[in-house]
Length: 276
Image 1 (cartoon, rainbow, N blue to C red):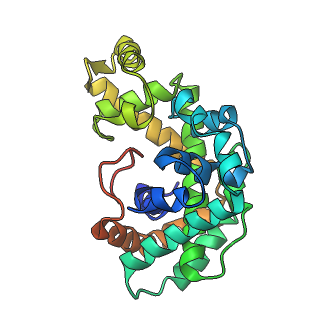
Image 2: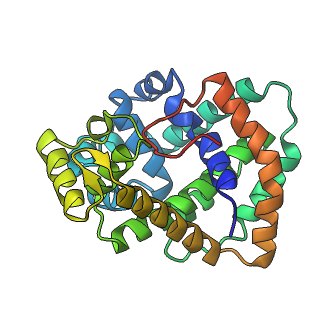
């Protein structure tokens, strides 16, 4: 099993594309409308030009109506390849600015080797991103590998959440109750106030919340979900890949912390992943 520091570092490196200050403007220049259309299109473009039902299922935490406002309209407004290029350019710029003159070549190559060793069965978003062309430059290669790894853990986490009977709104409500995400999480993920209140009502039936605050049982349940996700991730890594991930943590961690220090990713944020 790999360490939490490894996965949190991967998350931070990947997440720069979501918090880049000019992300919305970049996608709007291609013809997309607003932040969420850019987000939905850029993150799902690895799959081709998918419809809202597929993306809602794979992203899990977003309200169907939020996804449907962006897709499939995005594919009529902008070219898929240009969207993917804009996303990669954002990543390059944000990471380069964060790490300064640090040479990430060796780390990028190690991360790429690890991404190539994953078992993608049941991990569709990770597999889709792995199928994209690997950039030739070190920073691009690092971000590409981090993205594959990040979506790999995300796929595992969605499987664990759904097996536990948690839909997208309940999963977000539990994250909010345990302080992992901002109080405005339901708005960022597109859930209505009524849906949000109903989700806390269902969590209260489990004994996981008291009002909108997690109980000790709720905190323990959230930790069990993370442990189960770690086990699911570990199941797709053989002994060599696991050892590689452990070794890679020492190289990824300072990059991830440089990303945080630069302000490229702030905490807490809607991803619900703690700082590295």
